[in-house]
Length: 97
Image (cartoon, rainbow, N blue to C red):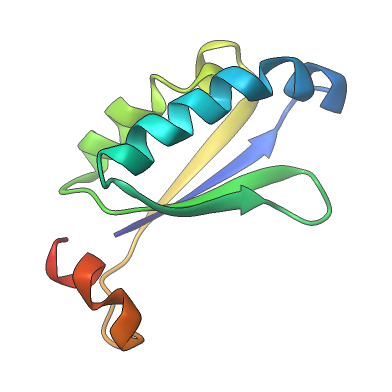
């Protein structure tokens, strides 16, 4: 599993301009089963995506499609982790990672 932390590097007006495209990107990867959860940071300085992928390389490929990446809206930090404890409601995601 991976935590993808986005940090905006432009004004929020520029972020808002590309938000519809970014949401289409997110939905594509929710539909594929790669994204588990996502949302804004508070205060609104970026966002977080929790993803289930086979490798960091796969995550980097996915990120390269994000309009926030292609339009240089955000910087990305990728953290891989291997869950050792989890709520039973997440068992499906853990067993598929």
